[in-house]
Amino acid sequence: MNVTQNVPLQPYNSFGIVAKAHSLVRIRSEEDAKTAQQDLKNCPEGHCVLGGGSNLVITGDVKPRVLKVEISGKRLVTETDKAWIVEVGAGENWHECVTWTLDQGFPGLENMALIPGSVGASPVQNIGAYGVELQDRFDSLDALDLLTGQVFSLNAAQCAFGYRDSIFKHASSGPNGLGLAGRALILRVRFALPKLWKPVLGYLDLERKMAETGIAQPSARQIYDWVCEIRRHKLPDPKVLGNAGSFFKNPTVTPEQCADIIARDPKVVHYPMPDGTIKLAAGWLIDACGWKGKSVGNAAVYEKQALVLVNRGGATGGEVVTLAKAIQTSVYERFGIRLEPEPVVI
Ligand code: EPU
Image (cartoon, rainbow, N blue to C red; front, side, top):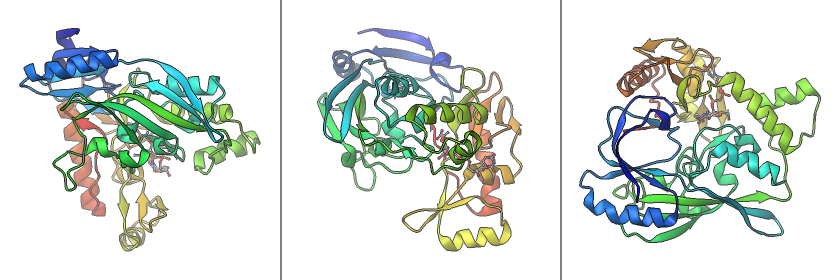
């Protein structure tokens, strides 16, 4: 097992925050994961699992042992009448995984192109973009139970996916006691990629691309190219300007709350949900409070998309958290809505 001490974490978090891991283990196989699990007994300071580091705010040197998942591999496992089942190692880069599936002729992940992060982190967040969420293409996954050392598999229902949510974000001491936060180390993920593929185009930005290009029936590759263009235009590249994608979830409110907000702010961007609630665009709420371009130290609100906080260079995790709290307070004071952060703060 390869344990190293005092490892700089700046290259491993997309915010580019400078911090060190007191100890870090690289996990490149299921065997490595089992050995690391055994060794946690000698780690009174606990552990945390690091994937692509794209959903993380580090507020200081990390004392718990960092388990850095680097398991690779991409393969077609089987095919049914309806789908290709593809298995990808948890340490693979998400966007490279999307590109590879399309290169193989398996469509379905194209709307989620360019989402930063690793394949192992994708079910944790139930990542999503442009009308498709991971759960729509998920088959199953294998994970190691860090408490017992057993490898187990979960299907979609067992992952309890919700909007940017899953069983992996809930503590085992939660209301239903079933959460796996801190307990599961995801080893590999299987996707079911549809043979009867239909493009998902309901999203405004994609409709604009269709109108601009006159392409009414785009291929999966065309949608992939459009999504890459849209994201490159709207969202900062973490390699250039550190960030963790959307910093807050889009909140849901009751129709009554929404009507109340519309009465005061008729332009509020809102989407009715199938369950009768209304989703509001957090980016719009933050923008309406005048936050674009504002900063705390070197942490700032991105000029082109208020939902994204960026590191202008040398920002600390504390500055990011202070800025996020100030945004939450101002949105609460104006709209009565509590924004919930997406990234994990450690
Ligand atoms: N808006 C503003 N001002 C802003 C930002 C947004 O008025 O500063 C308005 C936009 O004009 C638009 C609406 O808010 O009408 C929604 O904005 P956008 O279409 O950019 O999407 P979003 O709700 O901000 C979500 C996801 C993104 C995903 C996009 C596309 C969440 C928290 N974010 O963003 O996911 O890429 O939709 O599907 O659900 C991520 O999670 O890291 C992420 C980037």
